Length: 292
Length: 250
Image (tube, rainbow over all chains, first blue to last red; front, side, top):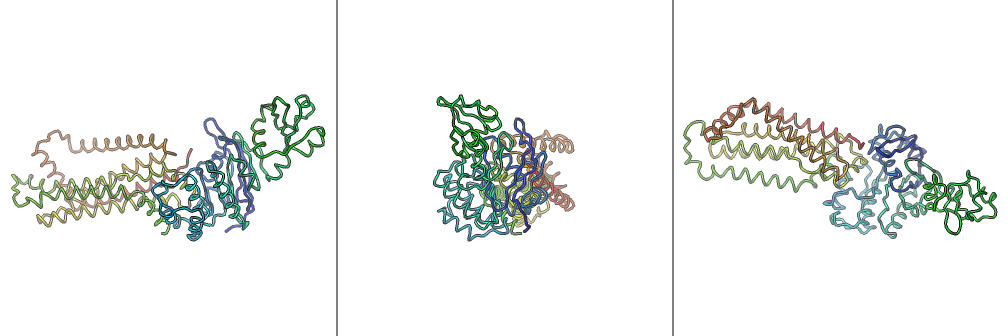
């Protein structure tokens, strides 16, 4: 096992598709950290994750996992990672018992007792065919498989999408438990920002193939704010302070990226804290400047 | 070893229904081919030597062909892997392309050997009834057919595995199907050219044809060629499947 500071380092990665481009993206996931990867549908989250996992080749840039090259050291890297997709990629004819038999030989650190423990905890049947599982049960099975081989990095692509709030909450709780030893990291892509607000230490925000923000979630939430004013007041606000402006019949709501500074500069306005959802929404409309 | 066992177990669980059906069909075909020997072997009075040879060889010929086709036949696992999303997911798992291809190849070879054993046993039963050995002939036909169909399956799978998902799979299955049909057409044109065109389908002509095949295929020297062709097809299958697993999505 090698020593590394960042579980994932993505540096200058570009991938071109017809009509879409992952444009020179860079970000890091430090060891022991939960990184939320947010962006609207089609922003490039899945392409980034597929590039990271070498499901697709990149056109340029560098990706390292545990300090190793994601292609050159692929075999070693893949023993130490776990992946959860939005859809269960297991065949319907298999049972949870079959999956244990399959993964047992694939992962050197597969632990059957941990697997059985998760299966029992999730209330999953061992001998029922996966095809007869509900969506929630399928996701739980995928997560049980992902967490049973002592993976140091868990990569999830929209894993909680489509699950009801109760199951989602249960899953988030398990992810936090999983991280407790400080040696494990999670990259979790989602457009359900409320989940990430609950558990993420860091957030990376991608839009139209570009990384707009990456950093600690608390800092991000602390720095951004929504300034409320009337439309007349807008001319007093420096354009440099504005991410974008949302107008309505009652006035305007301005997303500022330096809340502390804005609270000094625009003392006669109220500045509310922004949620990840707000940040995403205002950044998505950054080119329009004013939207409603 | 543990890894291979896991991969082969997965393949077995996915294809056992299909393989079992193939095995049962093959046993039925072989069983039907034994009926003439069981029922009326003693009453048979051939008109000439060619008819006698044809009578003795036609059944191992058919069993060898059917066995070879079934042995080389696609077992549907690649298609199921694409449809379920496992193909994409498998890229994130520890097995390398070589390990995945080796598991596929060993499993295919294992099934081919099982059908080969049935073909061999069939010749044994004929020997028991007639005292006439068709072992070499039967195995030659089986190995050649299996070899051709394993190569065809390698071509088909190579094309099919370009598919990323279920929607893609339909398109690539069609392309693969036409590619295999093209390969077989070229092979049949080559065979026709070699053996001149056979347009006479009279009984006598068929007997002559079988006798001619028997003349060549009952030779032990040809068995070496068939075994080499079979081994070659296995190597081709492994290389093409490995290459397919090495490929990444565009």
